[in-house]
Length: 228
Image 1: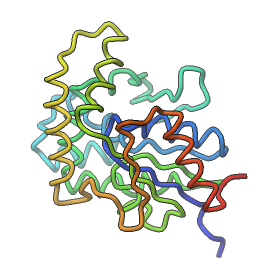
Image 2 (image 1 turned 90 degrees about the vertical axis):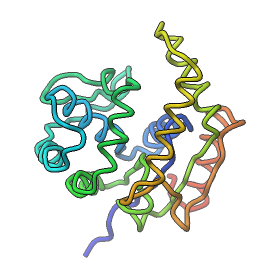
Image 3 (image 1 turned 180 degrees about the horizontal axis):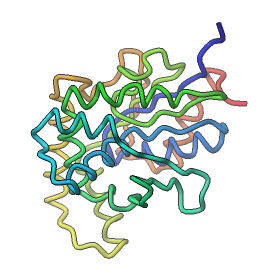
Image 4 (image 1 turned 60 degrees about the vertical axis):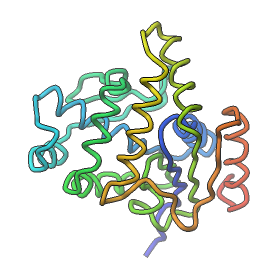
């Protein structure tokens, strides 16, 4: 029986540079990319659009099982996310969608419904998995596990600059509050809490720019003999 394709699992909260690092790793290595956070954001967006109760586990699990989701990579603007054939790439990146995703992700039946869908992304030549429980639950046998972290204040500052750059009206104190509450919810949930795997390499990116973060993670990849 052939060995499963190798996996690099990168976990941590939003605003740590996780998404950018994973996208660049996948591009450099020529591997597939799994953005598991986008899956939960799409589900949350779909639930809100359909008027589902975010406190109804059965309704949310049903939506998760029937989610018509597609990722189109290799485009100049990055990965395109389609829900029922419609482009929701930008709609799922709002603070509303992010907070709803955190609530949806805390539902055990939802996580169970999406587990196999995530594992099915493991294909040759390899997979870079971006999430919150990639190294602990989804791919516990990953060849490399990295956990990125940063202070809530720094992550809020990064998000604030990003949103202001897009012309959005946003409050920094409100962002810090939202991020702190989301972190606590993610860490305290009963299933797949946001914690590093015991064998994960933990990297605090608070005082690092994205180039330095990528270089350090790429160094870990080379140490494990996973680069070409």
